[in-house]
Length: 447
Image 1 (cartoon, rainbow, N blue to C red):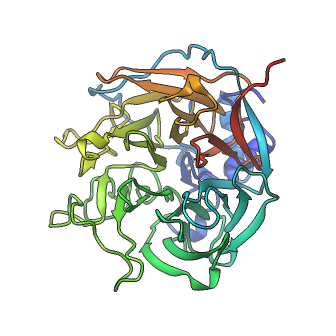
Image 2 (cartoon, rainbow, N blue to C red):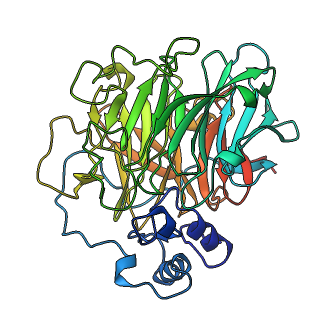
């Protein structure tokens, strides 16, 4: 399949069935009517593919006006970041090496290098299973936890993220329950196995709609648990969560799971709203649908990929040297990327993205990692990310003065339905796709 196109057939079926990364559910304000994925200005696809996707999402009929997003007036330009007009080829000769075949793999993490099972890779699949792959994907995949009875795979729901505690003693899951609400659960580990009968609910967040659940989760270098939530779904931030500090939706939250203490979690005392002025769990807000964030293991910088709506995909960086900019406002829905989307105000706390690209290039950003492995020296220090619709991988380099440059990693690394990235204990990168394959990014063998 040509990169950068959603074609008819299997790929369109996947997009219609699962809009986690890109966009919104079909018409209707109740969960009973949320059966498909609403098209939202995905200009990255050809006109024919767009029409085919709309027909698929609407049960085969031609789309009506209500299926499509309302057009926005011509937006004004805002400062910060830029969109690169072209992608100069990267000199790296890279390949994607398959290491496992699993149904809809959606998240991969390595168990921290402490205690039993250090460095083992664990993969979450959307239907609710956690699989053990071994330290380098060198063991036959084996299910070590199954919460399939607690979740569904309608619209953009399911098991969406996993993370380990710093000592590797507990595994955290971020998923939507059978009512569509977000849940974060904690499970103790015993050897390489997850103790599924000893789960403890940490955090629960009601979701008003089936899409934009976010769902990523990660342990930060500070030892706390970070989780991302979308704006509640629909389109145009119709529930008003993006700029609402009283809601965890549209936010990146930071909590202390407080294992063994009274209560489900504690609030880190240095959270920006721990005193007053907003929900104390919030670290950053103004997100639309943060689909994967990661901490640079060398610098501690926090990279956040936020899926756009009509025109722009965006990547933000909260620098560890700035204390991760407590209370950062990522701008949605005031801005989509650097462009005005709604309103007229530009709050002082808005942090504009370090990089944006438009829907001529891709339509749904998939956040990755800053490469800190040793197997691919030419990628050292580059942020590697991709796009679900385009099936392309890029490196992004951002200089100290904010100038950004993006380069495609090459035609040999163009995975269809690119849904997620992961890192192993050594910092090597893995790519997950809804084609059912987990890959490792490697230098192509010499001929």
